[in-house]
Image (tube, rainbow over all chains, first blue to last red; front, side, top):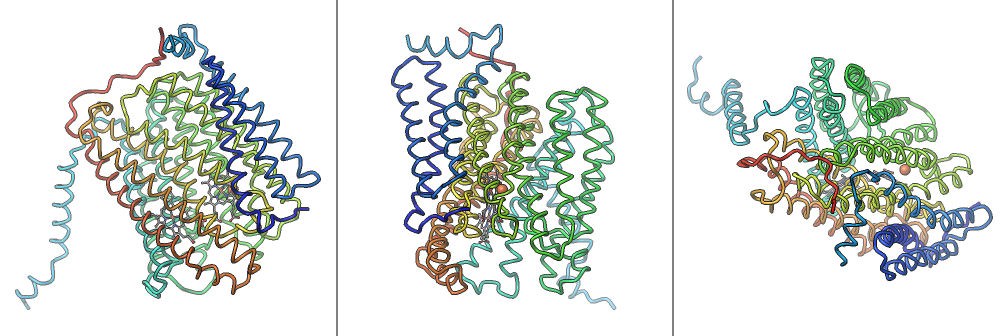
Length: 113
Length: 509
Ligand code: HEM
Ligand code: HEM
Ligand SMILES: [Fe+2]
């Protein structure tokens, strides 16, 4: 059964839903970037994006009044969005692995120097 | 009797035709395109693209009329009613996008299969049959606006199913044309080479055409009717169209940026798995309130919550790929529109879709301007953009594979067209979002979805302001489209430099 969102929670429901997707993408991008650039700030940024995601999931869970098996969605989002960027990153690298391409990694590291 | 005076007033049919012919020739001379730059398959493709652009213009004109009717409800009342304008607006959209997709496939299969199109003669006949049918259907929409709800209306006037309203005779015609198209594709690959891209394309086309049949039954029970109708709409845009666009993108990325086949193909397979894995049961988000069993609340909520994942993956990959290839391309407008597609798909479908997909909130937003906000951003962001990108690829070849990157003449035109179209649609999206928010608040939550509540919401100042802003941004969109058409007709006209062939160019140090 569902418990509809309360009137006062309309805005926060839309807001936290949008933030989940945006924070998920930001985390994925920052995670990928942190792999090709060892700057610690980027890693912290990635974790911060993930923290925003977790907070948004918690807020949506409250606002949308998830109970019982609906909580599976919250758990799936928290776990799924943590691992998905790692998978996406491996995929990006693996599909681009080519004998004569030194990959974007060296290019960016050289730019840094 | 000979009446010389009248002869001067009423033009003879022959002279009207002559005049039209003169104008057409003048236009052709001005555009100055040389079709000998194209293969036979590409010549057919550009016919599809031409009709697509004309229908795109029609879509926008009828959109403007319906938007104006929100502000002045009496405007054209009884002459061209809102329901008719809205119908032409969204049916023209579906049809122009399908024309764009079909054209793109005809464009790429010769290159992809390494051989000439099989059954080209049939394909050309099919094009004219389809275009004739579309014209007739639209004319009937406009001239027979009211009538009885009889079987014959269903066969000859209008099927009454949002987005795919074509009457049944046209449905059968469309299906026949699709079979010809399908034959062209399969036979061409069979004669030439199959590839991973070709395999995905053919399987996807089977699903796409097969689903269209689900929109052709007639059921007396509205729940049953809607049940099947959503199969077409949802499973098109959230599964088969996404994959079709994936195929077109995979091929375009190889051409535009020189990305290797192995990369685009691996991504395509993963995309298919993720899209179908979440999108098929995500269908449930349309079954919440139409009289289907209650378990659809959970199924729809859960699976459509997964739908943004492939979109997140795609946007990350697009940025990664652009970084690797350092945006090196010989066609700047096409690449710009591909990037607009990646972001548009992510925001329109992923973010805007997720915001209203859980039944806990969809209970209030269902069928309000909220849906229209999402509908505009997603259809434009995901599908208009990629078609426009392909139009630019096509025009480049049509001009003789000319250079269309840095230093193109009048580059401001494509840049402003890109800016105005995107700003216009985003502006409309935000205006509709505000209207939808107000509607779900007042009409649904406060007034409890009553008839009086509906009017209370429509009369709120915030709703009415939002409708004015939508009109304003609609005009911005229309200006962008005007510029786009002008640019497509003229870009590369005086360009002498040839585009070099793009080969896989990864930055190597
Ligand atoms: C490119 C992909 C998409 C397109 C073109 C698209 C388009 C549309 C359109 C036009 C409608 C309105 C249908 C009507 O006339 O009633 C709609 C409804 C809806 N869409 Fe999407 N959509 C896309 C992806 C998504 C995704 C990924 C989600 C979920 C995450 C989603 C969630 C919904 C929901 C819940 C509705 C129902 C709104 C209501 O109850 O009125 N859509 N979509
Ligand atoms: C000049 C620009 C445009 C204007 C003024 C306009 C206006 C409108 C209006 C008034 C409606 C009817 C909404 C209702 O029933 O309340 C509508 C529906 C729709 N339009 Fe547009 N439109 C424009 C451009 C576009 C574009 C560029 C696209 C996509 C490529 C698009 C896609 C749609 C869709 C999918 C619907 C159905 C939405 C739903 O029922 O939820 N429109 N439009
Ligand atoms: Fe859907």
